[in-house]
Length: 137
Image 1 (cartoon, one colour):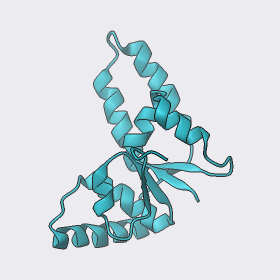
Image 2 (image 1 turned 180 degrees about the horizontal axis):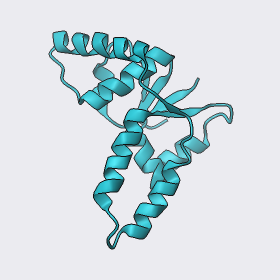
Image 3 (image 1 turned 60 degrees about the vertical axis):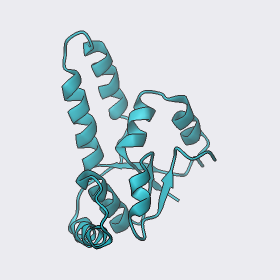
């Protein structure tokens, strides 16, 4: 099984948060942790907010950590179709989750990946293969 990482998991990996890093370390070596252009944009936005000031060295360290994620998936036409279906289903259910997370879910659905996250709202997305990495294993 391969995974698509949500920003809520990529950030802690970049920050070397022990529980998430240990979880990644326990994965089968053949497993690929993908990320998406959506997550990359969210991380880049966060890095931009850090700026160059007193946190400049930390920003450079985090930027280098982001470069470790080389398997970055784009938004494809199939992902756009998945986004439309998922967004519509959520609307009919009366559920509202952040659009970027709907995009991440749509990319996962389009590529057959399991989303790994630390956000409960992914559990509301019908048919999404997902793992909440806040849950103990």
